[in-house]
Image 1 (cartoon, helix red, strand yellow):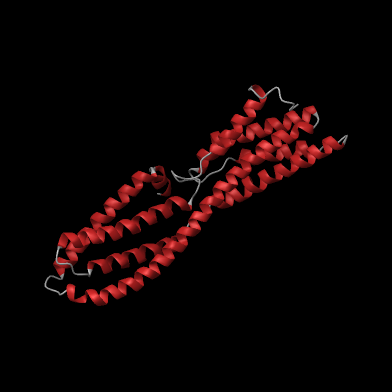
Image 2: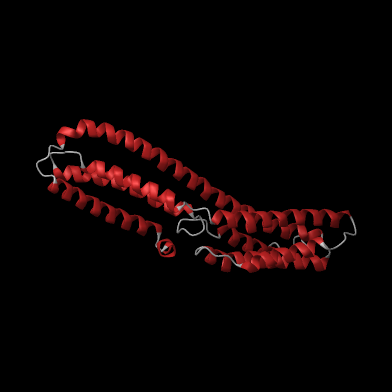
Length: 272
């Protein structure tokens, strides 16, 4: 079910949810007023207004708090992706001071790692999965850079910097990104949000407006606001699965940069 919902473009999902929610709540309002025909809804507006103001404020605090949490989670995912991609490029550059055979091995692993991120890892992450090969590539680069004895200070400095950025890749990519991708809202949190939304909408039904169409428009406005934020929260909770989530743009840039350094306009720079 989750995969199906995330396969729908965010804009289409928003429109579908709002249309369905407005239609159902509008129908519910008409049925309630028909069922309680003759009741003085207008006479209870003053008391009802106080109740919905308090209830709405409580719900707004909860909804706003969870939305901010999801947004920070989303921003962290973006930062982790950029950090990991930049570290991959830094490993490629700092390997210049390593012995030729080791340098070529480390650089080829970094290009392979970046390519896997674009071609395999991100498509799998759209469905909550990962490519296990990426971790092995990172460890192979660690072994290549760390298992030799530097012959001079240049090799020692290059080895130290390379291992530092490889550690960043390991920590950001194979640990923080993995944990971050699983940080969605729990079923209990969604239940609280949906129950709260239902209570606010039911309060809207109990108000009285002399013009029925005006009342329907007012209720539809409330539903539109709540529904839009809930859809936004849904799209933000899994940063790598959403249609508006974090894409492999940073990794595509890393692949292009390393390719340019090897065979493009920058290949004549002293990188070997």
